[in-house]
Amino acid sequence: MDNSKAYNSPLHPKDSRSETYGCRHSNPDNCAKNHLDLVCAFVRKDNMCKSPPRSWINHFQRLKAPEEQAKASL
Image (cartoon, rainbow, N blue to C red; front, side, top):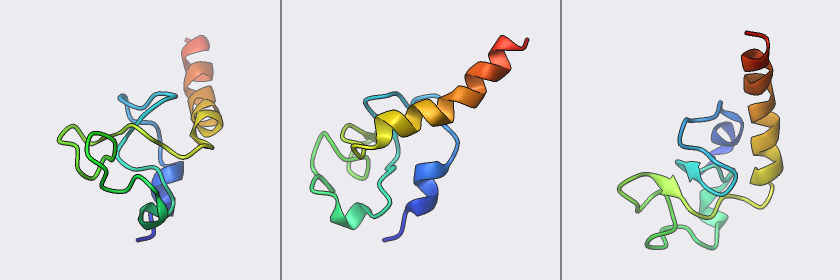
C-alpha cells in the first residue's frame, strides 16, 4: 500500500513528536509493527500510531515550523 502522501500531509492536532494520528509510514506494509495491537494506527480505535517512522521527529519539526511562524506573526 502506498501511503507517501500521508507522510507530507499537514499536521493533525493529535500529532506529536512521538506518535501520529493515522499512519505516516510511506509503505505501511513494510512496517515491522503493521497491525500490532496497541501500537499500529490500523488496529487502534483512536487511530494513533505509537511507532512512527524514525525520520518522523525531524519531519514533525519541519511541518510544525510554518505553524509556529504564523502564530508568532499574530
